[in-house]
Image (tube, rainbow, N blue to C red; front, side):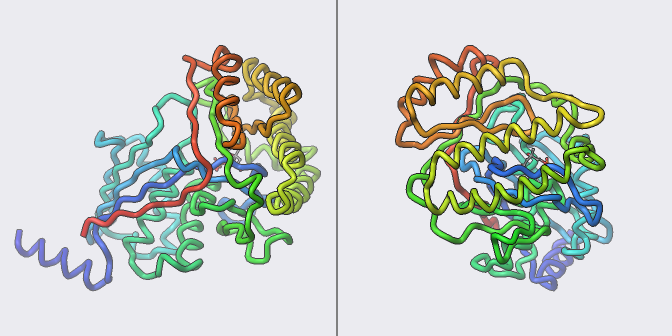
Length: 360
Ligand code: PMV
């Protein structure tokens, strides 16, 4: 036993590694949508996207590492062993070996938990892979957390787990995909928007209205692939590039009307690409449309700063300026709750980035 402990301590020390770390990472919601992958490389986007992190919807992941001769991964969710997750995690580890060669060997005990309930239909992969990627870079203990290099590396690793996960690293809006609007943007990792955000768009919130908590009928992986040869794909990619450039201007100049128009148009474009794929499909449900119409009617009647966006699913993200929170809460409770499954909705602040706790 003593020999084992000595081997472990020496192994970790030789690599200058840490042995156990916990990371809490937020999910994110795209304002300009990533939909479609290039055929070159793994998870390379066809167009640039931009997102807000959701500070109150997160994954908490602990990774404990011990050197070993082969790689062994033990995965649990909230303390319960989940073997069904292993193929995806193993594939992720295979993909990241080029960036983190030390993950080829060793014993990895990974436990993760989300702070939002299961069965809400909220995708947890962005927060989960964001947390895991941060934990691995932190265990490696090579780069300084205060540098862009550190977060670019975390983001690149997260991307190899789930494309949109690479945008969960920043409190400010995160841009992923090369764009002429952002000089340091890249297809390989997300960067944060460094310019100041206008006060009228600084303090927004997102309430996710749960319309359907079931498993999606068509996965995002399949959805992305249906953009290959899609009749409208090139037009969509051009539109996303144009929208991103304008949205970045809007975030700086505070034109809330344009913000609303661009964000809602992006959500509907995402779903119209699904509906015009071959085979075509639809993830919106009747209540998704009903909620969107309620939002439009309410905005027209009150002129308040609110809008919706959609992920690849039926749930509606209601975005609004926190200043009008009490009116929005009344609006949700009186008009929108009847459309929500089990009267469920989850609200989050905008912002947040991975938080790291050490155990050694
Ligand atoms: O990260 P993926 O492969 O699950 O793709 C998700 C894409 C959308 O959520 C629909 C849009 C986005 O940019 O996050």
